Length: 303
Image (cartoon, rainbow, N blue to C red; front, side):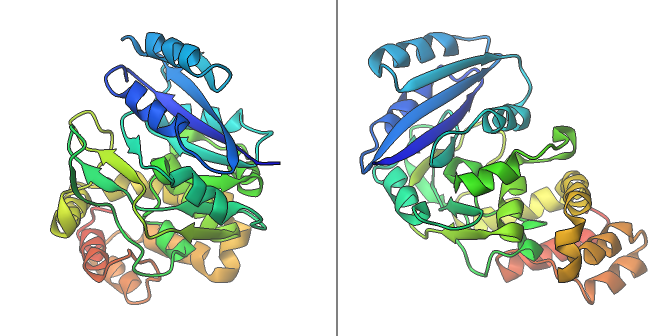
């Protein structure tokens, strides 16, 4: 029997690009069956009409959920909480375009995987017309909990996972204390299972003014954008999730020394205290320059 795949897409006012994205998912080929489940997060445009048209064009393959506006984090968690009965689950944004072979690559990687397993890959960043302009972050170092506590290189729109990881993600959580859902998922996979990172870009990741989060153009652009976010205090948002993740998974983090490291990291208040913490800080980002910028932001109290 072919592998059963469920793709979870959260849409909000996505009438402009939704059909193109959905069709790039529904036309994927390989030894699997695929269903696309779309949750409309309280759209006020013609998103509902686009979904209805997709259901007519692809009978039995597009499911629709009409929800109240909860925000992208809560919307994706609602989709995940309602998932089950399939072999593999994938997450999908509303305005990208999946490249041919993406689902097949994920299925091949995850098929037969034991324990909580996450598949991820980079994307080709693209302008609004889907002209490629760069690549999202590549894997330069091992993806461990010491990395995922402060950085995610597995963007949600490229995440696929098995039932073992699904059940972990479905554990009760306070969404208000989670900054970004995909960082939470990557953290669970790194701590309790494994992450299979495919180096091949498999998505055209559309960058435009409506993007909730995004990447700069080229390697320097990514680094500069990361640095700007750090200096603007993005770490202040992530540290709430960092503390919450550590509290929820204390028993698993303690043997690694990471729960204690989180406590020291977040409780240092003065420059001198933060400098002392950095002398034995296990947390790192994938590139050395980004790690340096992260540490500089921390020293300056931006994290």
